[in-house]
Image 1 (cartoon, rainbow, N blue to C red):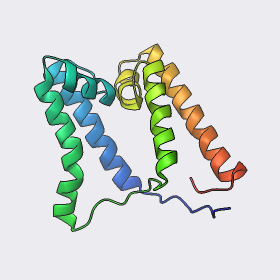
Image 2: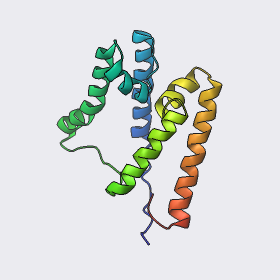
Image 3: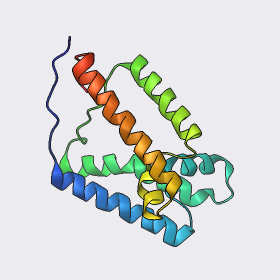
Image 4: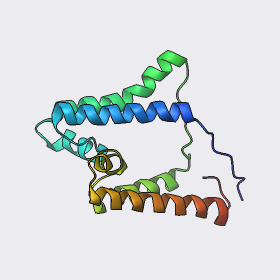
Length: 146
């Protein structure tokens, strides 16, 4: 049984990250008339005619930690498990969920809720309920760290 580790409380970093995510969502809508959902952006980078801005958006996602490294001297702290089979299973479940839910957390949670979309409200409620259940099971039933 793994010990449960406390979760760091980082309100200022979280606020700053939320502001940057919101700003990027507004910029994508204002500049390109599109929703800043990562699944749609990555799919469109391969299939859509307007792929230039999509590739630039993805490059920004990849480049941001590199800029952080240059500015601070270290990469941002990561709390993702190193268990590759579990990460593969998690990726499969997330991919299936985004296909079934017609979008991802960024598309529904950030952009859909801002547009008062009932479908996005249902999707976000489902994401949050599943996340709460997962944390409960991992921390209190299975006894592992989440």
